[in-house]
Image (cartoon, rainbow over all chains, first blue to last red; front, side):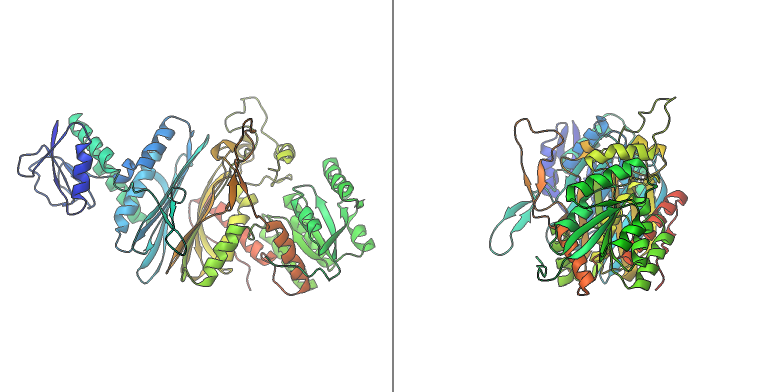
Length: 244
Length: 376
């Protein structure tokens, strides 16, 4: 059992609920000498304990910081990863991702996590990196295009143009033997209340928390390389910076 | 739906070769503003081309004339429908333009911008109209274009197109044994004629970007109001099919587009194999404006039909209300009338050819490439 303390400025309740579903987690208060922390405060005093840092960029040189890579734990991503790992899709050729957010979104975090996903799926660093942007006032569209040594490619576009409300994501893997499509477009249900209907996805936006916590706990229990997330995050961040 | 002027005398159309798909001359024949007069091709063409031309001519009860110049000289026609091997599109279209005939030509216009320029010069010199075949009148594209033109989305900032045809193209990559010869491109294309996946038929191997890239790039051109692509960065690969690998052409490609007016865009395109989608393929547009955004599925509207003993090759989702071919023919008639511009003319198709060429160059160098658009 790992004694985990949570200190989050947002979604604390969601994290606590998700933690209650994960075996091997005992939720404790921050002053109860936890085995590890989950926080969005990059400067937290952790007394040398592992820290799962969610929603913030890690501070350089701080030990045992495990930046969260939440996109790896999304239900659709888990399903796609399993399909790829099973060999059903064959050799990965393209990862295509559309990420549409709202103006208050954190472009750096979103794109770094999307790039991490591409590196995670391809299992290697890109040989070619290209980026471009278009913008008007506060609205920005950015595009990162990666080419891998194996010939695989990733095309990731981000915008903060959406008004208040839902975000939109679409992720597609094209393999040599098959393809997988995870798309908010096809997952929307219609709700009629006058004029054009609302199209809403069932809310699974917080479903990543459980698998993400389980992965963190597994890393601690198994004595795995706690630095691996940080290395992945830094690599993705470097690529994002290079893409401009 | 636009209604045509049925009072007018139909335009007489010569079919210059019908060896690839026959959807183009069929669409022209099906429209009340056109009558087919003959099929023609050069006598020197290989026997398989004569067989296909003759078959089409017999079905429509029109002569097959193995001499294009004689056919044009001896018959009173107004226009031609050009559907030969992809590498001959410009060559035959130029003959027609020089004879003062309006042209509807199959896609892609060419893989070579110099050939396109010669056609454009001939079209301009002779004052004829030239429509290049496309899918811009599919219901979803009409809807997308209306949304953009209405101003609802505000100023256009970004357009992305995913364009995957879930078709096979012969044996999968890696299936060729050590002592087997490479697959001949033309042999493979002739074999593909039965299922209509021979878009690149001819002796010149053409990748998916060259054969089908014109469709999504024509969407983007229409939605951006005809804006030119200035720079591209691209990656391409033979990922699925032995024929593409053996002939050093792509069947999978991604392209970043930097477009006039500060617009960005991208294209992800592939012939990804029949197993990779339940229907013809995942084809989508993602459009971002300053005031709104849109996600458009090219296949919609469609109906889903499932039944016992359904053939595995039959699409479970069938497109409905697709009037693309009729509306293209209507657009061609109106272009000849002088009341409408071709929805994709040879200058726009030429610049799409330049975009594709630049993308292939970029893929080879690993660097962004400036697109050689036609100078005004």
